Length: 105
Ligand SMILES: [Zn+2]
Ligand SMILES: [Zn+2]
Image (cartoon, rainbow, N blue to C red; front, side, top):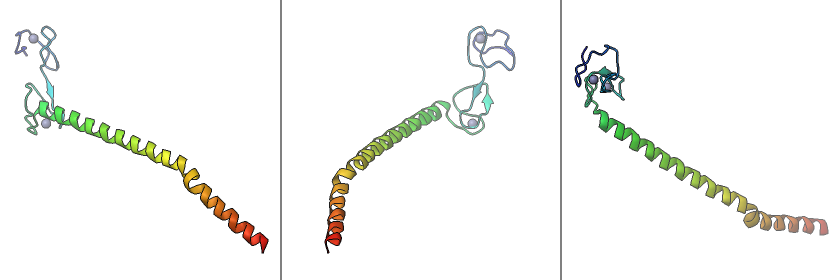
């Protein structure tokens, strides 16, 4: 086949033109269909640029959620670490008081 850009002879299976590096094959990011032109997929009609942009923004949203989760977890961890001091000591005092009362009677 011929390169549509520089008209040099290129192999049929070539993904890029060896001479001008023009893209000769486009792979649909959604259904993996390969075609000679970019833009939209012949098979599933997905717009390549829009699809890639959507995937990237979705990944960013995922990263934000993960970040939020880590922050929540660390604040939970802080609560757990503080718990023995805020709840544990009064409980222990009660427990000891009850024990000493029992021992006294
Ligand atoms: Zn070319
Ligand atoms: Zn497709």
